[in-house]
Image (tube, rainbow over all chains, first blue to last red; front, top):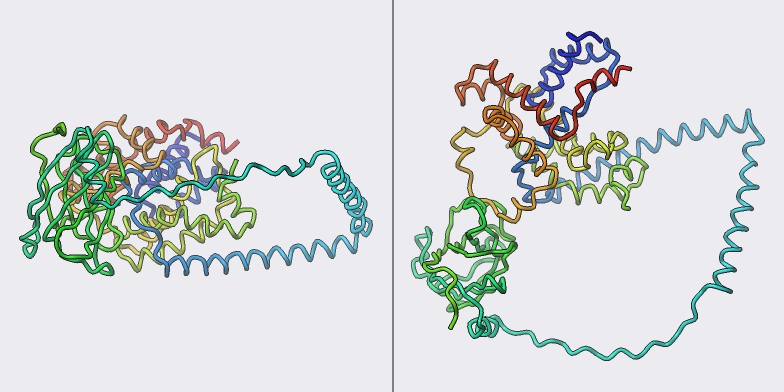
Length: 286
Length: 186
């Protein structure tokens, strides 16, 4: 392959990987590959695919109806390839019967040998190797730990010697939620925390959920830590445990948004129900 | 060692289809939505991508790339072809929109695949203009012309940055050998 063709092929591989080829370019590309007697080099497309993974948010699985479509097309695809293979197999079988009759029986010797080996192995296992069953000590029933309520867990955290971050909740950008209040307590050391919230309305779980976001010292402001989703099922004060999906260190701001059921990966911040800004960091609990 | 899903598919193991969908369905769906921005079109593209995956599973070579990258490659190829043949360009965001993305869960960002981390590392070694052009083209799906319009670079410069940038990324990822095309021809 001369240098000029090689350069053109590299150019077209690159163009194809980054921007795609139009019909004319594709034809030129295929002709060049054929003339040069070389195959497609995946390395350009693989490099572009790897770059395409950067910042890609894989935030939801395939929708069920689409998954069903893909499975149906897979069934169709595999059925058609299986049918093709069967045709080929039958043809081969015919050839064997017609031209090589001995081969159709030659497997019998191997089959007998295999059966004999299995029988011998089973005999050795049963008579010489298999461990005797020994009655073990009776297991002492374990005590079921008492599950504390969020109120009790919060009380325990407040009573502990851990350094705590505390902040008060105020209103967000949802005009109707003007009476939201409460506070949040977080321990870096224990990686646990609780929100005590008031004025947050009971949500319709089928339509929306609340989601907490933790802005801490370790994360970029564009990527706060997901503090978990929660529902409010009663009026008045609710205590919600924080379910931080990553280690949060030195939280500076807690934001509660209203999202679709299950929560989101990317919040558009359209409905911020409440905000709690930490004024003082890592206050020691005394 | 667990057998790669793609190898299982190539050997006709039908149970691998469900495993493939569970593991990579979200990846393909995300790539389709990112590049096509139209749900109906993205759904059709996803179905085509998976047929391509079943067909090409036997070509997967784990010594060259991971399954994730291989599947992302098949998805990109199919989707870009779709865009080019429909003569409709990707409706890319304006630069401002790209820069002002809403906030994203850190744990998801942190869970960026090994492949994405390696690619990000490979990108960091490029010149800023090359990084910008590759980001806008590959990640945001913009055409030469759209990049030229958005950045004020001449179209030839956009192409040069894309070319040199991707060559460098390919080298940095250990995918490219200077004489690779020559090797294939022998």
